[in-house]
Image (cartoon, rainbow over all chains, first blue to last red):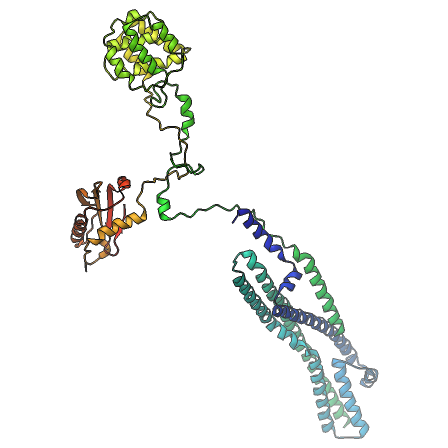
Length: 237
Length: 335
């Protein structure tokens, strides 16, 4: 072969496409699906991350506010009245749920303090569980993406390399310029998998620690509030 | 949730857009286009048949080694004493002249005329003998000398020293000055020689000019395609195998000897042109192995027994003196 020809073929092959778009469009359909799935997972992950970050910062603010009001010595009746007519979250929700049960019991004329105490505890537990569940919702998705996205990307890569090796075998040419685009597009899948997985893992760890912190805080409040109510019952009895 | 989703979608769109803009500009590795090296694959036989020559010369049927001094040699030819064979410079004539004049002195002037004209390419060698014969007789060269030409100097010499070695040279020496004739030195020398006419002096003169004992140059043939180290005359692997096979037929390797790897016997043998041994083959190496003696004897026996070997006669030079290794594990020939 003529040296000039060799040089030309070697130079010409790579510009078949290194751009992101051509890497995607040249890929095998399975690899394409993997990439699309990973992009979607990444979008959803970031949506969750943003959502949770906003939620937690809002919750923290609300809790601080509520605790401030709650411990300010304001009458619980007034507080209940101001909170009960609008949907509440976290601590306020716990407070409203307990207070509602308390009021209903008194309005229906049930006078057994032990029964009332038990019901209030139950209501607090249920509300707490609901609140924690709301905090934790969708976090599991982050964990799943974090652990499985690299494998999904790897699957795309393996598939892409497999097909590109088949193509090499078919073209009977082992020139690196022939091999490289296929491998590049295959590796692109792993890159996307990692791109989706890394933020997901980091966010999952961060957010779950945040969830447990807030849960503890809610539990603490629930215990304290139930103690207050129990004292009130004893005083009234 | 909507806020998060929107943010996420927008963020991904931005990242992908950035990727589309920036990633395509992946720079190709800076590399110079390398020039492909032309490679010829030679078989063993072709390699051994490489002729000596220049790599860039074209293939010629009649190869001669690359010789860069050739070009130079042409101008040099005027130097006395060089290129006797190649350049039959004026000398021969003068010799003749020298030979002739002794008989009759008048000719000298004609000589002078003759020398300038292009000399016929007569071989230098034939001339000297003639001179010798003639010169001894013409003792009276001196009278002839009146001619102011350099040749006159020649004549005295022969007369004095009829030895054949020195004679051929004097003519040469003078021959050179002649063609040049403008060169003052030779002229002066010759003049001195005339006046003194001392044989010792003359011989001294001769010695001065003598040194350039230029050997015969191989002609002006152009270099042909080949490798600078090529030998051309070499046994090809096939021929080696043939010799190996011939010897192996008669060889009973030492069976069951301990340490067979030490029992490699190297034998040097001289071969005549018909493939028979000349002189006794000799064991070249030695070993401390107790079986070595036996192995060496076996090898010598083998070499003698198969004596007339059939090898390409044209390459006799290459197998005239040959070393053969007798390796009990695998007989191998080597030289």
